[in-house]
Structures are given as C-alpha cells and as structure tokens.
Length: 302
Image 1: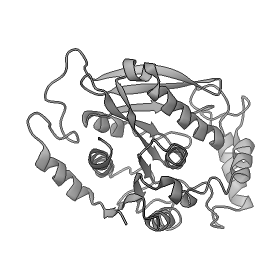
Image 2: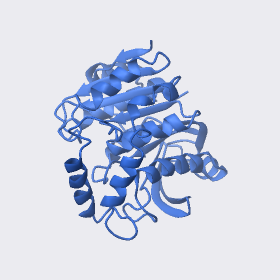
Image 3: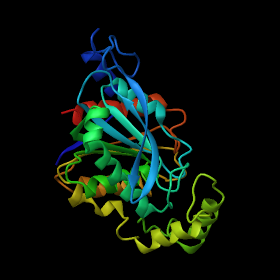
C-alpha cells in the first residue's frame, strides 16, 4: 500500500535542501532568472462547456515549457479562491488554470454540482487542445487537479472520470454523497437551499439556485459519494488535507472516512495530513502552500 504522512515543517525543509541559486524555493522566493521570450504571465481566457462560456485566467509559468499544469478549483460559492496558492504553484514551474463554473461569478449557464463536474472535464479538454498547448505552453500529459471544499469534491470526481489525470488533491474536500445524518437530512438541505438563494454569485435559470442545487445533489447522492471512488483513483497520487478546526466540513465526518476508504485501496498513492486551520486555512496559509507545492513537486512534475 502506498501511503505517506506529510508534515508541512518537514516538507519545506526537504525543498530547502534541494534549492539552489538557479532553483530557489518557490515558497519564499521569486524566480532567479526570467526567460525573456517566455516570461511568467497572466492570461485571461474563456472556454465553452456545454454551450456556456466560462470565465477564467491562466498563470503561465516561466520558460517555453511545455509545463505541467494544475487546474485549481474553488469551492462553493468561491469566496476563498486560493490564488496565493496559485502563485506558489506557478513559481514551482507549473501553469495554473483558474476558472468559474457555469452559473457562478459571471460565467454563463446554470449552476449545479453535475454541471461543475462537467465543467472540470471541459477545462481539461481546453488545456489538452492545440490552443492550450501552443498559447499556454501546456503539457497535455501532465495535468493535475487541486480543489478546495466543493472544488475538492470536483477535483476527486474529475480525476475519477479521467484516466489520464494522475494527480489530484482535495483541500478540505466536500463529499456531496455523505450519508451522515447531520449532513444529509431535510432540515440541513432546506438550510443549504435557502443559503444558496442569498448568493448573488451563484445562479440557476437566472435566479435563485437553491432548490435546483439540492435536487441535483439528492438525485445523484450515490454517484457523488467520493468515498466510493477508490477503484477509479487507483494508480493515481492523491493528497487529502483537513483543517483541524474546520467547522464547515469537520474532519471526523469528511476527512477521516475518506482517508480510511482510500487507504484501503492498494493502488492509490495516498498522502494525507491535518493542519491547524479552519475551513479556509485562514491562519495556516504558508503551511497549506508548503504541503501542496511539495506534494506536486514530488508526485506530479514528471
């Protein structure tokens, strides 16, 4: 069984031992030299998913590439976008694609969790396209998914659905098929629907998204259970991170069952850790960046 325990303090020391003047630590330093013909850059972009135009941007890594590329997936509704993490990943030599799902933050279409999963597949297809390879210097064979909260759910589902994605990280990942009574009950679902309807950043049919989101989740409860994805993630590197003080998706209800399920699948190269943070890792951002960047460097670069 492939399994590792990752401690952020150890991880940063490991990178530091390999850092040189030519390859400085991306967690603490900017690139030592810049490729004048292919410098780091920020490229606005859009792509189509099931007829809807999705808004995004690409953090282009230094050099001609082709570069390994990370799709960074935000949660629900996407207030925490983890773009500090995107910058660190880029300094480590990876491109980073960040985008907004259908029906969120100005992207066209209707928001549902099923659409989110399909949008991840569309994003990967865009990166593998001729445009992705030429305009954005993407290596189509080295695409990784990293997601936070609902984005962690989307990352795990996306990797399970795409055999060519070999690396996936869930940062406090949601499990929308979780059958725990405190998560899956009528009162909780009504509250989530009502909360969704208050969000101006999420829409369905031009208005409130709550009932449509809940109906989609209930109809796909079994398919959305990420704890059941072990066989589809076999052969992949998987990183799971929890915040010890996360009250939104408590580790005992979400992280621990997922770790147990994936550890039982011998083909998964599993790394998991619990950081001293809340759901957004508000006071442990550097520990989060250290954990993710070092895992990407060790597992997803080649």
